[in-house]
Length: 102
Image (cartoon, rainbow, N blue to C red):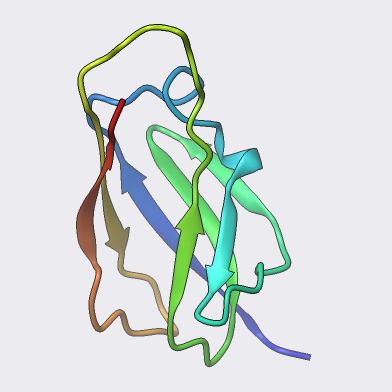
């Protein structure tokens, strides 16, 4: 049994959760091999989301579903920052921007 660690993402930008992309309950956290991480993704409010990852994990990613509509929209952004927490070190990817292209 692995000990789980928690990361918190601070998100914001021009993309709107529930309009441009799905709420955190529909997100997937993926390991380097493409497998989904078991455990809950929690919407903490105020643009923050927490999720659990297995101890010793070296790399992970997110799959955030985009919500389709019939209108042509400009690109929307989804910047993120990984906030420091005890028990792990983030070597790269601490900040970035996801762009939804219509």
